Each structure stands twice: as structure tokens, then as C-alpha cells.
Length: 417
Ligand code: IMP
Image (cartoon, rainbow, N blue to C red):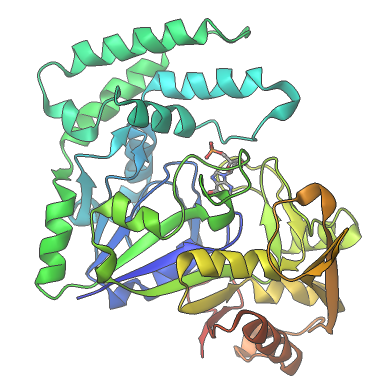
């Protein structure tokens, strides 16, 4: 049976969590394949809000197994807290949670290094979430860090000390006043003990067996395609492959098993942290959308930068990922404005182009203006005509059908076309 994929097409925060939760009952396994606790997937279930950082977004469904795959960088302290918090809501949750022994562990010194490295960038900061993501992936590639499976080995503590000392020495090359606080380690060691009690597995074998036995897997992406380490606006990116290739390397499933690729985008754009954002709106409309859409980071609380939908960038993300269907999120938010703009092309020194360009300094967005659905009340769960026109235009520009329209944060505020 196939692997379906759900991933973000913009700069993250597209609303993937809500969607995974909504369609999870169709699957046997929901699997996170990359990223770490830099993600913040917000789910609203019967009016109650939950923000998941590491747990896959199918965790609330009793018939779904949930996997944290080998491509994830796992902060045991955050995972422990997240589970502890949710156990009040459902004390059977860990029975359906599985963690890959090959997932990379985030150590307290990774988080410290993240701060030190980001601090040293002065005015060139990436805007990292400071969750230790980049240093953990750096160490994974450098082949010198610890994996989840290592916590079961007798030399774990010895190896940990070796890496910690290496990190503290490394920090000395950065000009910083930050001091490492050994207090962080108390929580770390408690969480390592807790991690041992979870179902730690050879997940690539486990997931392939499930597929061979007819099971259906949904791979859940974190962040967005434009933050991909290879295809995003480098260096203002995260440190993993957020795009389709990350599914195979982050879960150990073959490319031939991938079937449906559901690309998720918001009816407008947002970005947190630094980096180019051609359609950014600095004016009142941007502020209005930010407030209406509650565009403040789920992980860091930072206000998100807001702008119009960027079709060339979206088309690029669809191309990289081989998107088969689209889901448009937060369509209701744009009812706070009268007319809606969409960037269809870029103006360059050499004329108009319709392809995505990384020559950010020399491109200007060209917009189409469409009549909005100002003040429309979505409580009837109906799509107004002007929103239908917006959807049809986007489908024409991208040549991919929009099959899901989200009109509010709750599971039930979702229209399937
Ligand atoms: P890092 O992944 O914490 O190293 O952050 C690198 C960049 O990716 C920064 O600009 C972050 O704001 C951005 N980023 C990381 N995770 C997310 C996310 O889940 N949503 C949106 N932006 C993110």
C-alpha cells in the first residue's frame, strides 16, 4: 500500500497540523520525517487548542500509529514535556507512539551552540528558533553525534561527555558572552530515562512491513518547501530537506511507494525569521491579516511577516514536490479585506518572468487584483462565489486541483471538493 505525503509549500506555518489531524483516520500510520521541535503544529479539537512540536499530528486518533522517523532531530526534553502535558488529555497516547532508534538526539549543548552561532552572526542572523536544529544536523552529517538507539548502550554517558566537551571547546571560537548552564542537563537526563520507556524501534523495517501488509502511511512534513536546505532561500533556511526527498531519507521508504502528494498553502503568505520575501506587505493590510490570522509563531511567539500569495514561488514548490493535490488554508482570514492581490509574475530588468527567481534584489512582484469575500460569514460552511473565483484562478495558474479548503482552525471547518 502507498505512502501519501502532506507538506508545506511556503515558508512553514501553512496549517499542516490541522490537516493531518483531519485526514488521519484514513491512515494506519502518521510519520514525521524531518525537522524537530522548531515545528509548531496547531490543532484545534472541539474548541481546545493543542500545539505539537515533535509528536506527529495523528496522535489524537486512537486507531493511528504515530512515528517519529529517523530523519527527525529529537529533543528528549521537549518530547517528555509534550507527552506529559497531553497524558492528562489521553493516558493511552504512548501506546501508539513509536520512535526511530536512528533519529538524531538533540543535546543541551546543541541548543547552546545554536544560540552562540546565531548570536555571532550579528546583523546576518537566520532567525533560528534556537532549538538546536542546525547544530544537531551539522553533527549528524559530521558523523559524530548520538542517535536515540545509543541511549540503550552502556557507553552512552561516556560518549555524551565526549561530545559535550567537543561542543564547549567549539563554542570558544565564537565571540560571545553567553555561558553554558549545566542546569539544563538535569532535565536532559530525566528525559533520557523517560525516552527509554517509549517504543524505540528500527522504524524503516517496521514501516516497510506495514506497507507490505497493506497498511497506509501518511508522511507529515514540518516547516515548508521554501525553507528546504537545498531548494529554499539559502542561507535563510532550516537544516533539513523539507521537500519530497526528505520522505525517503527520513523514513526509509522507497520513492516508488509514494502516491499522493498533498501540497498545503495558505491563501496568503507568511514567513518567520530573516530572508527574502518578495510579496511582503509592510502596511495596514499586512497588519490586519497578521491580527486576523493570529500570525504569531507557535514555537517562538514571534510576529510573522505577512504578504500576498506568490504564484511563481508556489509553482516552484509544486514542481519540486510533484504535488498531485492542493489544500488552501486560512481562506476565511482574507475576509478582513476588500480586494485580494496575487503575485502572478515578477518584473526583472529584462522584462516579465513567470518562473520563480532567486535574484531577489532585482525582481519586483507583479500583482493581479481580485474581488475579495469581504466580511463573508463562513459559519454555513459554504464557499462564496468570489472565493470560488480565487480558487479557480489559482488552479489555472498552477494546473493542480485545490481539493481541500480550510475556513477556520477547527477540524470541522474544512471543505472537501
Ligand atoms: P531553525 O530551523 O530553527 O534553524 O530556523 C531556521 C529558519 O527556519 C528560521 O528562519 C526559522 O524562523 C524558520 N523555521 C524553522 N521552523 C519553522 C517552522 O516550523 N515554521 C516557520 N518557520 C520555521
